[in-house]
Image 1 (tube, one colour):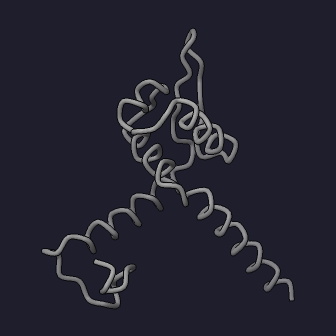
Image 2 (cartoon, helix red, strand yellow):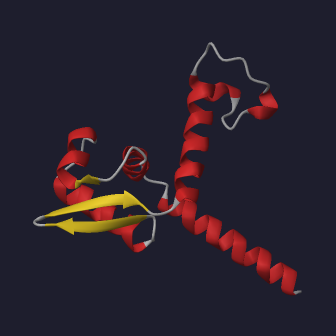
Length: 118
């Protein structure tokens, strides 16, 4: 019975992670920070959103432990703290991009998206 509880804990944790990553702007933030730490102004130059919205998403990712931050005078710089989240995002985004590319031949069993979704 303990194994079932362990499996439930794993599934609960994964569902929480997927919920955290279910917002496109958070995926864009993670993608941008894969290239190195950035402040809010730098992130806003790459991601089309408002400053309050960006700050809210950065705060959520920080509280979840996905991001770290440091203060330099008046600027706060954000960086990735979770390589597993970056790896997961990279893998899924790469897979979906490949599936959306009509030139890439892929077996139906290797697809995340249904054939009609292209």
